[in-house]
Amino acid sequence: MNRADLAPEVQSIITRYGQDIIGRFGIPSSDKNSGLIVLLMQEAAAVGRLTAELQEVAELEVKTVAFE
Image 1 (cartoon, rainbow, N blue to C red):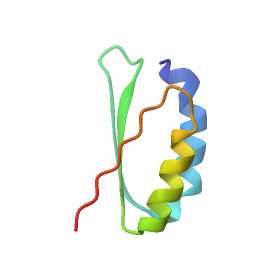
Image 2: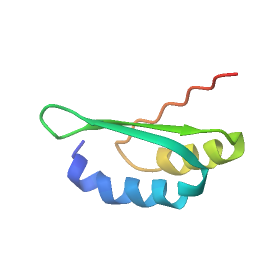
Image 3: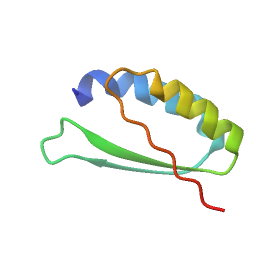
Image 4: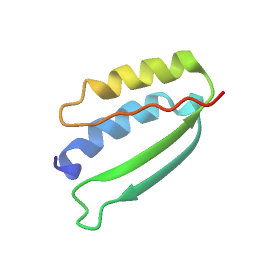
């Protein structure tokens, strides 16, 4: 995975859901070739839509955690 190649597309998708995102935290890997982005959201439907779009990005690993 090349972070620099994926970043613009990932950022574009995240930006479209900006109104639904309560918090965002990002950590790059030490070699700056990959990273972790944590998004905090409340609306389950928006989480589902965002997850679906991000899963379409090749080489991107998407995980969702729900707290009740």
